[in-house]
Amino acid sequence: MAEHTFMTAFIGFVFSQLVPEVDGHRLLQMCLIHDLSEARTGDLNAVQKQYLVADQTRAVEDLIQPLPFGSAIADLLEEFNRGETLEAQLAHDADHLSLIVELKALNDTGSNGPDAWLPHVASRVRTPVGQSLAKEILNTASDEWWFKNKAGSDEV
Image (cartoon, rainbow, N blue to C red; front, side, top):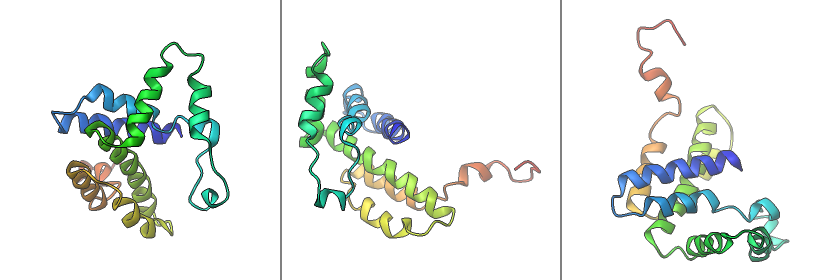
């Protein structure tokens, strides 16, 4: 969960630099807490959700109840879940792009399965800037950064 949250927040930072009209502070906050309820409920996949229902509202209420800034967290999560603001839409895209980066790396190292998931996850990205980044990720080898500056070097 920590690695996913970090990647989502970093992608949110990238969006804050690429989209001048976005409230970058709010976007980053949303990216940091978007999966907060999963600290109590776990991250249920599609099969598990056929049998279980996580009470995310209760999980968040229990988490924020003792905090003097709990209402700020609740407001951010509500905004994220509604998905109506630009910040919420970009946070959702950052969440999906984080998974795309992970799946792409697995796919590029020969794992079976990610190639079937990549188009499905990429189809969830909604904003033009998110779609552009998704396309770039999908068209770039995960290890390109490593070899790009190694030409002519014996170091690997």
